[in-house]
Image (cartoon, rainbow, N blue to C red):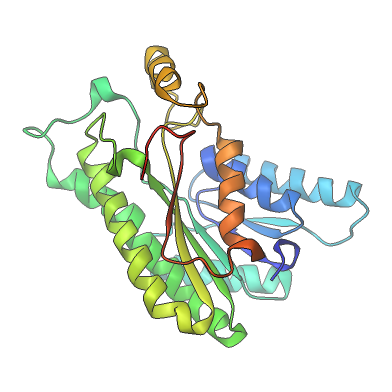
Length: 263
């Protein structure tokens, strides 16, 4: 299925990386569900901008809708999928699991091994693993019926390069990599692919706003491209997993960090 034929849910798209991913899909002609939990004004502003761009290009088809849902809630996710179907007249074909439980990438303020509590891990697992399970299960009936589906999870290069031991965040992302691969094996016979795109530190998202400039400089100096990847550059890699170019790719983890980590 061409990108322009897809209806794409981007969770946590009201801000940060999700904002860039939603814009990238809309640029390619996809219809986009801009999901948000609390960033209503920013999500609705993005949807308005994407729809205005569609009208300016001569298309009368609305390209985006902003829909609220806490993706850790199965009931809210089910309502989200129903609302998206009602709005566009077709079910969601593609899910980008981008939503991130509240987290600040500030190594100086991280919890260390002797102080971090299980509540921090539980929050990250809820926001990452449970949320992905909820969206996947909500998407499956329509994807199976169509014989087509694209599920994309967002990971991290801290698996391979734990330069800052964000114990809770990295553990949850590692779990979602495992789920990505088991889902790929389970859902492949139905024409559904499941892949992960993993970034490093991005310049700049809401989550990385607390990162000291010296850290950005150090990463850029260690990266073959000599710079830190931007959210827009990362979003383009996400498009690959949704596009026909990746039709035979599933269960994979693509590291998008300018060549910093070799996997």
